[in-house]
Image (cartoon, rainbow, N blue to C red; front, side, top):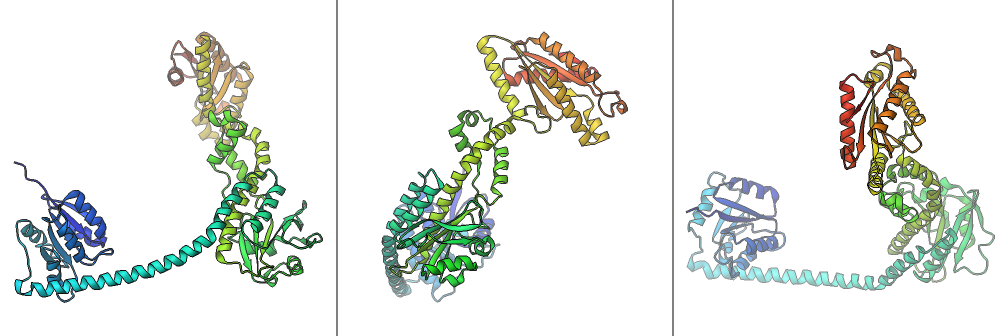
Length: 561
């Protein structure tokens, strides 16, 4: 009869100690379970029902002795063997552990040579106990210790409860502001113009977040002056004559990392023109923020998800069929964002001049969150027009090989699938030509990559000039090209392929007389749908196979699959 493996649970918060003990007990007769805390150990014991439980006396969440008492009183764990494995050297550590419910006590550091034997002895029936004459004394000591720890816990809970009450009061005080913050952000998202966004922002800061005054200082069209465009809470027409010359470097240093900063007095403003403007409105403490991106925290506006989402709205087909070149769009947008146009739109002024209420740190955090969201919305409004301008260029780049200006491989696979579907619907054939420039690596290695690129471009031009307007030509990869010939059987594909082979062979290329074959030539493999394959991948394999045959048979020729 097969002997059941003994399960040992080790409860110890020190990872290195657990690893050592588990390594020492790596015996075929043991299954070792580990727990890093008392609660975790109790849950694991209830689930796995170990034969023996090793536990440390000093656990982070519960005393090891209290855990032993709890394990011993558990209906399904009361017969498990419990061993205290600890380095505690306090008086009566062994006796208190035994009266708490442990069956044994082993001191650390363990003797690795005899430790497995000690464990086996307990599994085979060994038990330790406090002498009966001393048991009452130690039980009383243990119970008094429990009472003391319980009193400490109650005191800790009272302290924590007091802190919770204070924090709860603060949360109740400012939860209304946070709720309003979400409402403001939702309203800002409905803005369709920059001016509407600014006015909504300025008004909401006063009406919804309970600040006394707020104004927006925007850059003029020449980006040389700051002028107040929106304000709320100011008496009369205080802002109408305000116009400050803008010195970006002198002011923007205040927003190196954050979008909002607390100014104790206008004297802290390094720019003299702006400082004078703030002094004219009798401002003391105030917050100054920017609608834009801090110098060291450029917000990542353009992500793959955002691009897909945007183009999914204005051109669903590009997003759905995958023809959109995300990397190309991203590159164009990053180039655009490197300018200052989207990084800064103006300054937001906020204060409590009427009530003299201080601006606290939590106020700054709320304003920071609001400005962060408002900046994203502002930048998205700016980006929308630019994205529309870039769409045509991005769409072209998405499907084009930049070297040859032919269609790229990804668009070729999409077009092949579309042509296959069309041919099936209308019951018409089409041919696929896979062609490769002969000895191109030799040419490249001999005359350099730039010369090789010129050959690729020239071959691409010849292919475009000598095929039908309905034919689809793509750079498949490296020096290999692919041509889809709609509504053409294999024989028709062969005629076009032979024509192209002759044209390339007869066309002079730089330095071709120095090549072993005395010229730049191509090999072509031809396959047709549905004669050779009933799907795109199969058709590519067939045409490739024919191409390799042309290569093996001497190059500069056409082979049919």
